Image (cartoon, rainbow, N blue to C red; front, top):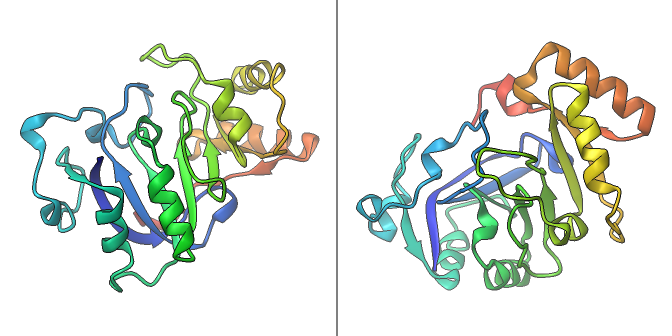
Length: 222
């Protein structure tokens, strides 16, 4: 079962699919503990916050409420005609706490492009057609390591930065990895800070990497 916090349709605001209409499925639960996290309400999966499956679809805003869905139940909701987008973003929380193989396989079979956004601190289990975005969370409060398996499965490595040490940490993290999928490496300034943005731009130009700007924050959309 998948613990679903919310399901909503919007525009993907960052990374390689920036600007693409997308349906986001946010899953509940995350042990990583990023200090800048803007979805702290998804960290705990408490029994008293569980609601009926249909109820979570009507909830908006930052709430710890969640509902259990099977993969097939979620596929039924996503494909019943209420959404026009055909790009699915599975996020969290930390979505890779769950085995996403069945959900991503079924949605890919329905003609959808699936994308997972993960910290890399949990094993990535998904259909081969799924586009995996790893935003490696290094030395976070939860004390979890970034897994080599996650990095080597990534199609995109989107790294949050605010200072040079964050780029150095990324270099050290990737050095022992065999990145056979040749993922696109994106630098994303934390909280759109001016200094972080200038550093990310300069590094992307120097290394032929990609800048990931959180356009949804500039546009004030979910």
